[in-house]
Length: 429
Image: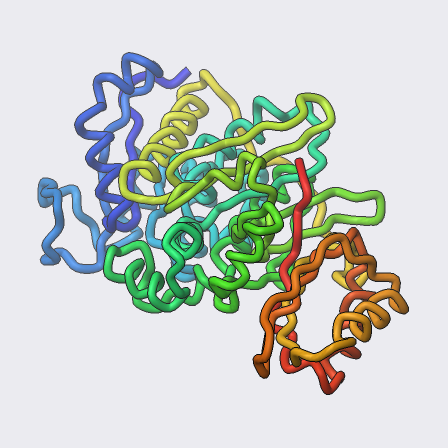
């Protein structure tokens, strides 16, 4: 059993890094009292020593050469908070090879390199923790790794991007356009200057790879996750969804079926009485359904300095317990797989067509849907004496390949001006 201080080095001193430093400094005695682990900040790797920051550290704490950290035998834990793929991935590998525990919040590195990094951690017999990679401050990875380790999980479904949830919430509550709310989100700092990773679903897809690996013991690469963002969501769609009894959320969904894993990130209609429908603004939530415990929901702030730093510090303490000999944790083993082809999946869908306002249009479209085995559960037809009026359907559960063929034929009809939107529907728990 190791006694005494456990040295910590942090790579990157951005928003989250500064939050981690602050918590480790202010709460050091409390953390030690609660965990028995005395964590000492030894080094912080930065690119620019002269950059103004919200916190000040002793000059000897700063490092610009990563080798200082690798060669320091008094540093036991490396905390990677740089973001991006490179050099973050190389730095994580080097730390593991140097027999130093690693804590990371980097969902991009995990989404792209989890199999090799987890294998390296097992080979070197050192822990690799990543609680903050999904859901910010929400305790999620730990429960999936430990509390629910004996559960056969059927599905994970969540709101795991705060930017898109903020935009959809504002559009729904205030009836404002996507572009208008996006501009506000940028001004408030909820969206980046280039928000593509958020609004196109890539950020959520990165996080979904982590959730699927934990839920189903299978790594699914980013290329096999069907990903769609929220750029095409119109306030018309939000209004019609409400009329049908649904809210629209950007959901990351992983399901284990008899014929394979289904995985995707999509705007989704979800019943207004579902717990996820009430998750608004920048909050995140993940809904887990297992055979043994049933339904669970993890809810909280999915980003920000202190929520994310809280999760990072929890991982640092866990790594400290392993180093001290009072705990043990190595990355789980999982297979590498692929998702079920999207054309073979089934589900319900919301379809908004813009059509000519003349008799017989609904019948023509319904006939094509019927010929392809697509059954309609609900329909709304609005407008009179206009060139383009909305015709909106919600289908029963259908094969997605059949639906795609139907829409291809429908789009060619002279009475159909546009297939304006097709959105998945999750009917219940």
